[in-house]
Length: 239
Image (cartoon, rainbow, N blue to C red; front, top):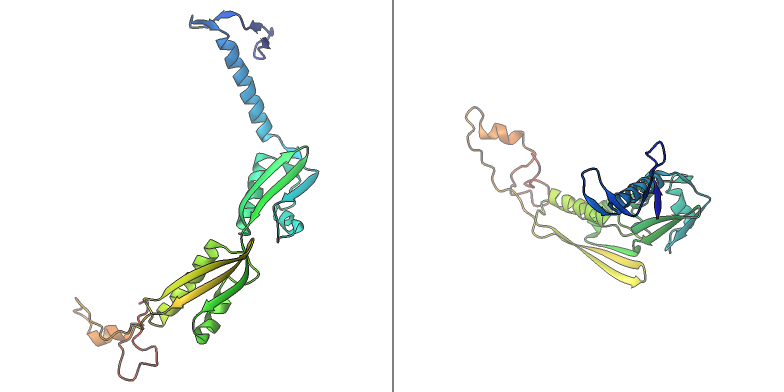
C-alpha cells in the first residue's frame, strides 16, 4: 500500500516497508498508519461540518400527529448539517409531543423518526365541584393533548398551591394513568385535601420597639376567631 504525504512539497512517497521514525524507533508501517488516521480524521471532520442539500423529508413513527405538523416544527429546514440537525431535534423535543426523536440523512433525504407521547383521551379532576371550577382553567393536562411529565407536575403544583391558600397545608394529589389502547391513556388527578389548618395564636419573639398588635396588623395571616370557620380568617399565608 502507498500513501502520498500531502504535507510534502515534493509529494514524497512512504511505503509500508520497514521505516525509521524521527526519534530513531524502528517499526513496520507505524508512521504510515498515523498518516492514514490523520487523513481519515480530517475527512470525517470535513464530512460532519459539510452542508448537504435536502430534497425530501420523510416522517416515521407518527400515529396521531400529521406529517405536515411535524415538518412545521423544523423551521423550514433546507439543508442538513450537524448544527441544523441539533436545532431540529431541539425544536421537536421542545414541543413536548414526543418521547424520543432522531434524524437521519441519506441520498438528500432527511428522515425524522419519532415516538409520540401517549394521547390523553379522558381526563378527570377528582375534587369538589367548587374547586373544579377554579382549577380546570389553570390545568395544562386535558383531553386531546399529549401526556407530559413536566405539565403534569406543574398541574399538581397548581392544585397544591390553591389548597394551601385555603388552609389545607397537608393536601395530597395523586395521579392515576391508565392505558386505554396503544398510545392512548386516561388521566385522573385525585385530590385528598386533608384537615384545614387555622392559626390559633401568633406570637412574636424579640420585638422591643413595636407592640404585638402593631406587628399583627401588617401580617396577611390572621388569627382564627370564634366566628371565622367559614371565612379565610386564620388561614396561613405567605407574609
